[in-house]
Image (cartoon, rainbow, N blue to C red; front, side, top):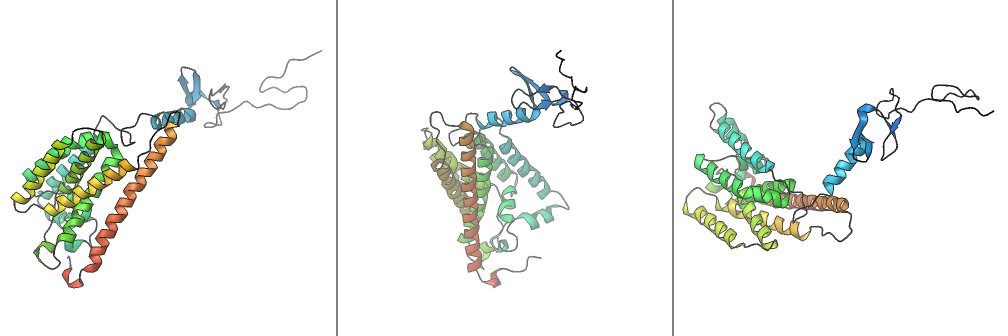
Length: 313
């Protein structure tokens, strides 16, 4: 006579014990429901319900990442965003730093440790970036923040967040590198501090021109905007035209290389794989740009005599 197969937790005719399947994330929980995607057991806490049935949290995470990677990219291959998080963050940092610059008891420390001057490059290289978040007055701050708000939102969508951030920061460094190279070692401009986000903003001007041109848009207005801002650089004393020039050259060249190395999609191509390739390629471009700027700065540092670098403290 045939016998019914033993159920879980009971012994059959052979006496072998059968254990219930358990959830990989919670081994102490018996799990009789299996993931529709990977077929692994999953407990109630690890189930994600979809239109085609329940899947485990691991598979849900994989699908979410694949979906994000396969989303439509902008013209340069980045993932754009309608919310300009990076632009607002940069503006916020500049505003906070300006407040600290004018806060009694703190302003001196901020100026000493974050302001860039060519003679400080060897001992305080971080000031090549930090000085880009300082400003010399309220009008200086307002003009730079307006320009950053006006063009930053568009470029953050066009380039993608981290590409946009990388281009801005590298433009700040490029602006200070130009200040260093165009200053005369041992003379007044070698010891004069330079502050402001203008190098980064002019880098964005250059990138805006490249983006508009590559996308077939009218770029004449961008050239007029750049020309007017350069004119102001020479009309008013105390403005570092060297920083503006260095920042614009840096931002323009980086934008050109980003467009030249963008990954082009073909019919039927794996969009997620293309997205990863685009991200890796442009990360390498930004890393290479940083290495070039570091070499440019180091070359200048090695050419100046030691007597031009007085003790800092």
